[in-house]
Length: 149
Image (cartoon, rainbow, N blue to C red):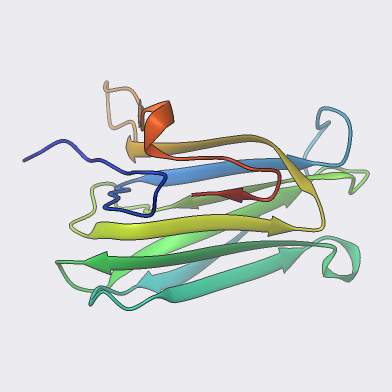
């Protein structure tokens, strides 16, 4: 199987396992409250789909995942969101709990509302047993103040 690839210019992108965004207001996150995890279907067919979830007091923070994919069939993915105890920071993780995905993402974008991204990373393969996470190369995705794509 060919190695996954993604391009900043909106060309082909493959994201097999996870995308992590850590959004903060100003300083490093402290203790994080129990995360909220919501399952959603990632559907192939080349059509752009979007899923979002909000957390925090008054749904202060929102994480949105927009994508188009090909191949395979619907897959169950999850979005996990957590906030710091003082609700000044939050994390958003988008991942496939079953591990390997048979979908090929032609585009993807994870966005946050209510904060700016301090750290973002995309992985082509998540750790399994004794293997390590395999991050996408820095030229294969871009992280801005509000999005990872």
